[in-house]
Length: 263
Image 1 (tube, rainbow, N blue to C red):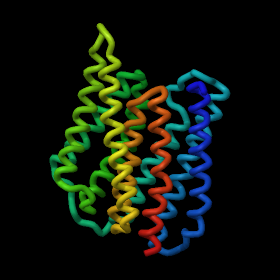
Image 2: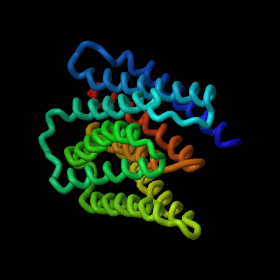
Image 3: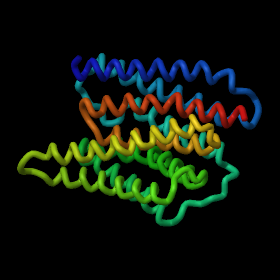
Image 4: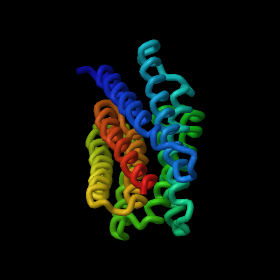
C-alpha cells in the first residue's frame, strides 16, 4: 500500500467514525442545560468530518499541491475550539486554577510548536492562525487535568520533561546540515509515541475502573490534544500511525462525555 493510499484510507476511516458518532450523539441532545456539552461535541465532530472530507476531495483534485490557507484549516480550528468549549462547559464549576509555571510552560510549548511548523512548512499565516485555537485547546486540557487531579505530581514532571525533550530534539534536527539526522528524528518519534500510548492506556484504565467522568474526560481530551500535537510534528508513515491512534480518542471522548451528561 502506497503512502497516498494509506492517507486516503485513514481519512475515510476518520470520516466514517465521526459520522457514526454524530448519529449516536443526536438522541442525547435535548433542550436541557446539561445537554450543551453533547451538542458542542456533536458540532465538533461535524467540523472534524467536514475537514477530512475537504482534504480527501482536495487531494483527489490537486494531489501533492499545498495551499497557503486551506478550508480544512478552518474545520480543524473549529474542532479544537469546540472541544475546548466542551471541557469548559463540563468543568465550569471547578475553581482549581493552573499554577503560573504551568500556564507559562503550556504557552512556551505552543509557541515552540508553531515555530517548528513554520520552520518546516514556511507557511506563516496558516501556522500562526492554526496555532491559536490549537494552543487554546491544549491549555484547556492542561487546566482540566489540574482541575480534576487526573495526574500525579510525578506524572506532571515526567510529562514536562518529555515535552521539553521532544521540542529540543526537533529544534536540534533543524540545525543538522551534515550527516544523517534520522536517529534524532527516531528519538523524537519514540518520545511522542511513548506519551501518546501512556495517555491512551490511562484513558482506557480510567474508563474501565469507572472513575469520575470528569477525570476520564480530562484524560481522553488531553490524549486527543497531545495526539494532534504529535501529528503536526510527524510525516510519512509515522503521521498515518499517529492519526490512527488519534481516531481511537474519538469514541473514548464520546464515552466519557456521555457518562458525564447522563449521570
